[in-house]
Length: 287
Image (cartoon, rainbow, N blue to C red; front, side, top):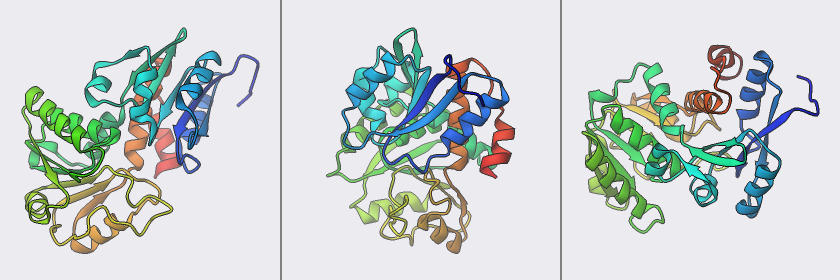
């Protein structure tokens, strides 16, 4: 890859970001397709996101991604928001079109495609989802659109994202054929009942991510059962404690690596109008 005076910048904003595979994934794709782009990571912890975004606009970046905690925060600084991102209430991908910043959300698309690649059929039974933040909201919407018949959104009633969980359930019930409800994570009996009937449990929170790898998003895993699928959107570590414990019980498991790959594929197409060399990137960085 040759850096020139014409090279355009793209980046990832959020915190933490040092562990991200995105620079390797995108920069290798740019090299393979002979695109004069480069992609970096910027940690926004303790920084003013509004200032960050204005600097990126002034630098004429081709676009950027956002991870926690910036997916929801970015919304007020965008010039245009695609309908899916507006419905979800968060954007993880921004395209710069002549100084206009357009917000999109590819998380849910990436998650659904990654699970379908494992052979999971979203129409086969109920799903329980831990979390109601930006990634969780995107997963919930796309899973509902993908045919999940029942969706239990598990969230703490005293948590900051609980109002969003209620809004999300209302939107899904009004706009899809899925029946969604919200269950307080502090209600152990209700949580156990929901998970016990599910064919899929997904952790869409950051609980269990490095460096806090011993943390569990559920205090009691006795409701997990052999034959169900347990997925985690975390990919650092690749096998979270939740996935390790689920495997001991006899569950099928899936981590967040392929969700990252396929949401990245969708973002790449938004930025460049081209198909990312996904299978080459998968073999080099993900398998």
